[in-house]
Amino acid sequence: GIQVEQSPPDLILQEGANSTLRCNFSDSVNNLQWFHQNPWGQLINLFYIPSGTKQNGRLSATTVATERYSLLYISSSQTTDSGVYFCAVGHTGTASKLTFGTGTRLQVTL
Amino acid sequence: GAGVSQSPSNKVTEKGKDVELRCDPISGHTALYWYRQSLGQGLEFLIYFQGNSAPDKSGLPSDRFSAERTGGSVSTLTIQRTQQEDSAVYLCASSLVKATGELFFGEGSRLTVL
Image: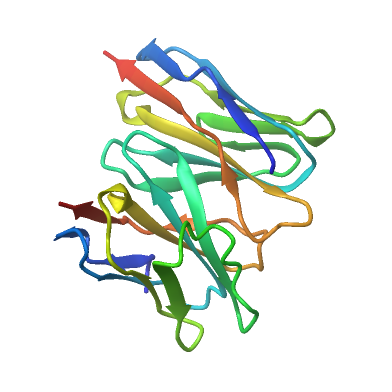
């Protein structure tokens, strides 16, 4: 099946810093989503971005499907950004399920 | 409803017992998914329902696991003869568009098998 790798696995930032999270995937996809899992376990959908670039406040994401990667940018990080960020992809032909990466654990400190 | 609702939020059971976990998706969402997340791990796909189509059961780990979706809305995940390795958070998600829409997750049901 499709492989999804996220980097870095762990990241510690000071409040106000910027960061880039990366998601690499092993095959063509027709669905890519970024999620934030807060410290209480709730998963929040950040972006549905199978290709192109989107921005939502301090967050933005870019997917280059032809090169099989996606980037999530967090600017001016806040402590509430802490948690785990997951990339999930849907493989063309098995579009019924998303395969999740192992996540990037982000801790934002004061 | 306003969001995906799951119950119970916590379930502690003894090894060998059966458990049922319930998911009530967002009203109007035709696609429903079950995932499992073990402690500190990523999400593992279990099963997918879309409308009246046959469900994709390819992620169910054994025949002790089954799920149904009644009336295209509420879904129940049943685990028979629970084992300690079944301990995890079981997450339900729904989406509006068939297989390509944004997923919205419930808060999960934490299952602990003693």
